[in-house]
Each structure stands twice: as structure tokens, then as C-alpha cells.
Length: 278
Length: 279
Image 1 (tube, rainbow over the protein chains, first blue to last red):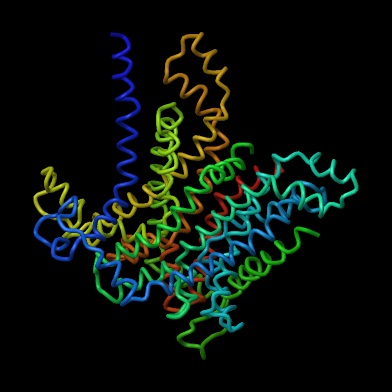
Image 2 (cartoon, one colour):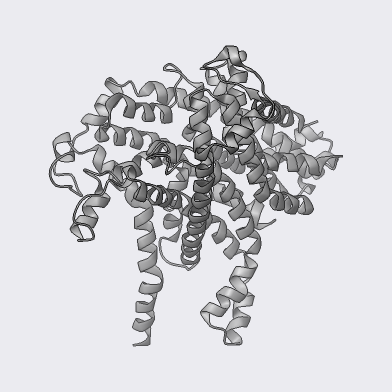
């Protein structure tokens, strides 16, 4: 008797609210997917169907064949990959020295990286645009890599510093007593332990660069355009063809979702450690 | 020194541009009229202060941030409290509920634009079937509904981030405090307001600040849903800056970007002071 009452209470205090919030959070994705596989006749028919009466992959086919969606996908992949590697390299070094060495101006430097998160993107957008133009970098993938470094490096330094703080420095010190120098100790001892965290940070950087639109729309042309820009341009080209647009959306988010699920545990840990531990 | 590569890049790509933006804001810098480029002192700022669109954008930004971040926080908090209770499938729910956060802004704009669509939109259909409305509403193309609609979208995007940060904070609270409170016969509400919320002060503070800054800077969602319209009713300051930059009036938009940065620094300074103190 008492148990069933408790159970009923749990339904109302836990399952009902959580299902409601999840429905709200996930419905847009469901709707986007359903729209992408509906044939046009059904899509713009007199009644809105919540599950397609007929399936079609037509929109995906024409996205790749007529609108050459592979090209912006490749561009995005290129930009995101380069950004990820460059950022990881410099940020790991910086985070390592922040956690292992004491030096003059360390606090100010760390503060500097933090302030970085504060600058409005739009503030950097304009001067970077004219710098890229003057340096003849506009419309190259490199211009986006540089632009993305403005927000990926500070955030990665922050995340990696959080992970590294958890690794006791006695780890490398033991190796160094045995005669290894710091670089060797770092590569042999720290790097293997840190790898999952580096991967998680990398996933974060990749997702951010894959998703970025504001810089990309100004810094790319038809040849170098990345996937969010291509998606937005579909609207310009097609008016509003929602079957194609939603198919494009599904394609955009699939890589993100796969990477995200792969790294989410470590990623959440890194995002939250900085703020929770202070 | 190991920091130097990162520092070098950040100096080049952040601090030099910031200085250049400051310089630009004192110039008549319109790429469509390259011959007129030149120093005009406070000219841009005077024009901005007299621009009614600017003031509307400031007002919109305030509403956008207060309503958007406030409700993200509220629902994020609730979600975190729910996810903090053990139940089967919690890990999956936690991961899945974070997807909106990882979704590109353009796609978010697109998905919601389609949901809000005035002819075939699912929201209209649902509300019609439930007899909330007798005719379809063009949510994004009338001034009375456009802004609330985009705000719902930013709330949707921000709930996961709050939930995850607060959840991490919740898991850091020691169970002993709750046990002690149980012994003293504290109610659920008392435990929430006396233990949970005070212990989360730090997390809440930092997450709120970060979100306030991100949300005020966010361009892509509004830009892709309404472009700032209809009749500027959804144009926030950062969207206005972006709109001006896309028509290549760089001096004017730099001026506004500087103003936005100054406004944001009011929010950011306590955050910085705190993180400096803690090193």
C-alpha cells in the first residue's frame, strides 16, 4: 500500500516532469527528421501528419547530387580538423605550464585567457575581416582556422587546465628522478593519462568549429563555404523547400551527435570541473 | 616558454583585432565608399546615440538576456534536480538532453522556423487541434509574437548547459548535510533553500555569467529565424552589429561592438575578479 503510493508520487515528481522536458528538448529533432523523409505532396498537403504516410529519401539524394552538399561537408571537416589539432597543441602546452610552473605574470596570463571568453564575436569579426582581406587570406580555410582560434584556444586552455590540475605532479617528478627530462616525462607519463581528456577537448573544439556560422558567412565564398553557410544558402536558392532544408540539417548534425556521444562523459567532466572546483 | 605559442596566437587573433576595432570605431569606415574612409573622432558614437534602431536593439538585448537566461536557468535547474535522482536510463537521458547544446545555431534557427511556420507549422497545427487558436498564426512575421518565439528558442538551446553545470554542482554536495537535515526533520523545500541553493552559489554564479555573455553575443539563431525583423522587433545589439557589418559599414558596427563590450564588461568584471582571487 505504502509502496504503491511512493511509486505514484515518483511518477509525478520525476517521470512526468522529465518526460515533458525531454519532449520539449527532443521534439524539434524528431520533427526535422520526419520532415526530411516526407514526400513533397504530403509535406505541403492539407493535413499535417505526425508520422509520414510515405517515405522518401529523395531530398537526401538531390542534396548530394544537385546541390553538391559533399563539398561544404568536406570544407567543414577540413577547417574543423585543422582547428582542432592546432588548438590542442598550443592549449596543452599552455595548460601544462599553468599547472606545473610558477612564473611571473601567471595569474595575469590566466586572466587574459579568461577575458577572452568575454569579447563579443562581432567585435572581432570586423577587424579580422579586414585583416584577412589585407593578408589575402579571405575565402581560404586558413582564415576560418585563425578566426576560430579566437574562441577555441581560451576555452581549451581552461578545460585542459582543469583536467591537469587533477593529475598530481609527483607523476612526472618520479620519472624525472629516474633520469628522464621533463619533455620525455610529459610524453611518457602525462600524455597517456591525459589522452581521454585531450580527446574530449578536441571533440568540443571540433563541434564548435563545425557549427560556427557568423565568421564563416563572411570569410568564405562559394568554393570554401562550410556546412552551416551552405545550409543557410539553401534557403536563398530554394526559397523554402523544407524537405531539402531539414535533410541538410540532419546531415549537419549526424557527425556532431556521433562525436558527442563518444566523448560526452569526459566532456561534461571537463566543462564542469572548472566551475565546480572553483 | 610553453605558454608562448598559445599566447602568441591569442595576441595576434584577439588583442590586435580588438585594438583595430577600437581604432575603426573612430573612423568613417564604409567599404562600399572606400574613398570616404577617414578619421572622424566620436562621429560614429554620436550617430549611434542618435539612432533609434540602436536604442531599440539595446532594449531588445536586455529582454533577450533577462528572459532568455532567466528561464534557461529556471528549467535547467529543474532538469538538474530531476537528473540528480537515481532512475534507470539516467545516463542516456543525461547525454540525450545535451544535444540541443551541441546543435549549430543555424540549424536551431531553421528547425524552429519550420516549427513556427504560419502555413504548415506543427505548432500551429497542434494549437489548432487542441482548440487554443481558431486560425494559424504567422509567429515569426508579426511583431507581437516574433520576439517571444525567438526567446523560446534560445531557452531551448540553453537549458542543457545549465542542467549539466548545476548537476555537477549537485553531485559535489556531501550527502551528510542532507542526512543531518533529515534528522532535524527538515522539509524538502527547506533542504532546497537552506542546503542545495547555498552550496551551488559558485556554480550558479559562473554559469549565469557565462550564459549572459554568450546569449548577448549570440547572432546566428535570431539572424537565421527573423534576420532581426519584423520591423526590427527581434534585432538585438549583436544582430544589429552583424547586420551593419554585412553591409560593410565597418566603422559604425565597430562603434556599436565597443559599446556592447563595455556593457558586457559590467557583467564580466565580478567574474574576472573572482577568478583572479582564486588563481
